[in-house]
Length: 114
Image (tube, rainbow, N blue to C red; front, side, top):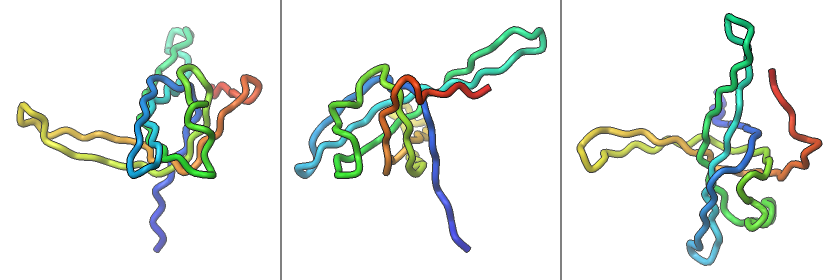
């Protein structure tokens, strides 16, 4: 049986921070995705979810400097779960997308899903 761990999101970049690890640039950034639907009263509702993304500099990735706040992106990768105990002793779970493909989108390529 093949196990699959794949996620694809499309949204806009939020906060961005980068650093260098073992002579390779790594960029951590957030992506906001919106889910649009109509409530019982027929009024449109937008639900925003923030995703944490990690990308290592490579030939397959866009220049890390092109990943900037507000830029529309399509991200493919695997979902990674990190569990830890916080300073106050409570168990926490953190999710991030370990990207293996990122595509910077033009405004024409941005799609709304309804």
